Image (tube, rainbow, N blue to C red; front, side, top):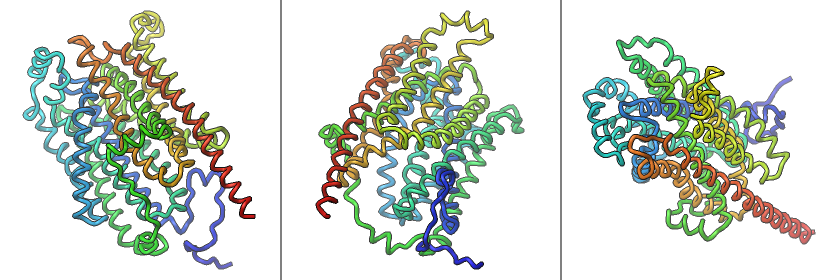
Length: 520
């Protein structure tokens, strides 16, 4: 029996239920989708490698600790992000769509490679001594966490680079490319496949990172330096592979009209202006209760998880004092987070089909609240529980690290599999203009506040409330109070938004039914 080759216009059979979840791609599409999946895999793997390493270095740097992370996010990452957006906008006017990808990627890969080969080996010459950092911390206790940030400046620079990679290559470059070469009807299938790819990248990084931080990497007297060389070597190789496949797609794939027809793409209906200024965003959100509630969900998630994560990493530093041990720990974390997220993707899809929007949207804040409250309760009363834990041969630090591991991993797995989906679903009942402009407004304002809200809270408490020799543990009660208040407000916002989602959906359905009846 002869078989005709599949084309984009051929009838397409339905997928089985299992395949529709994990691999909703037709055979003829593999030439396009597999390379795009590999590009995303490379970008996510690099991001996760760099993210683990940045935490390992900063937390265990001389005179440093998890407290420095909040200062870095607030005073370094946020301004660098604004600068990047300005430079990217200018670069987009100079380079074409393909070349802007290379121009964005190459400086990061070059920096990561140079860091391992030249900057890190000369850190003693480039950084302040531990004695200098400690003396400055003692002289200016209110500003003590700025000095490890400045004194270990190359680690801080690496931290900023790792954070920007996620925004520059993942959120911006890859999805911009995917949106340019994918029509809406195919995006619904292909993007689900990319979500699975994202989680396999986490599992890969967890296994590889753990291996190269556990074995003897043949470094003379500096095991972390050897591990860093191996891991950054893999990062550079992944970056080169990413560019090679991206170029191959432009030469061999996007020249095939089955996969990309520039005439069709350029003739797609023009959407309304999606770039909304910060001032316009604030006006839209404050004048639209519906958009304001969506923004509240995003901000609340960012604040609550950031507060737990800061204290958790501070406890982990006490347990894993050198960078290799800390990186092994973080590699375990991303591996299990990848596994948990894949499981939650399967569960989340079924929950969305079985329950109302409000029920599904409430699960993320509820799980975060219960787990986070348990974590903070233990941290605050750890001394009272110390003798009881000793009967099980456990210390408060071990338990706090384990609890934090489960809380952060669980919160992020539920976030990726349920929170993100319900958030996007909340836009569906809106009219087309609000879907475009409203989403852009929320992304501009809530995205920024969500990422920096937890960091700002920690900065203020560490600067004005914590004692001179105190860290995050000394302000744990205040952090817990903020956490509980924000989590409860998050749940209240879900209830109010759920009512509005139901009301608008019912109104839209009634309008469609009336129009259909009128047509007959």
